[in-house]
Image 1 (cartoon, helix red, strand yellow):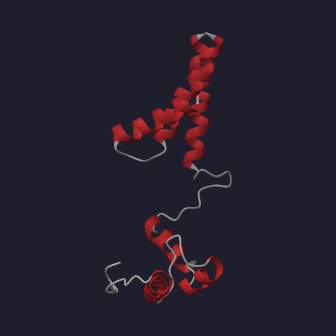
Image 2 (cartoon, rainbow, N blue to C red; image 1 turned 180 degrees about the vertical axis):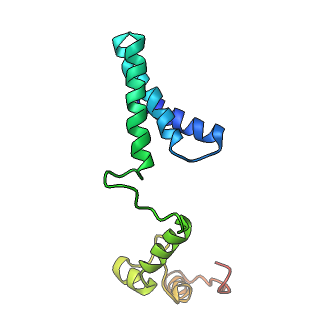
Image 3 (tube, rainbow, N blue to C red; image 1 turned 120 degrees about the vertical axis):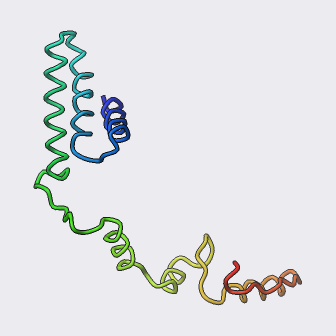
Length: 134
């Protein structure tokens, strides 16, 4: 049933080239129809399809929450998420102090400390890399 819903919802969005409340409505109809196939009667298939279509279409139309539509149409969603990410970003030194260096997290001066460590431990001379090329 879930597969029928997702396939129909995404296929209708792709074919219609629109992302609106009709896509979940169509997906809901096919999902409900699959649920109604259990009874092996056409009225049951159509009734379950129509019920699921109304339920899922209204749910999506109201914003996908039970309390109503709250998304501001004037605000660009990408810009809003970028602002949230920037607002919650932690300083690199705080992250390095908490997790330690490695795993893609390197504090300022890491290349110099690495070069000294390799020279002291193994006697290897690692060439200096310009700041923008690592």
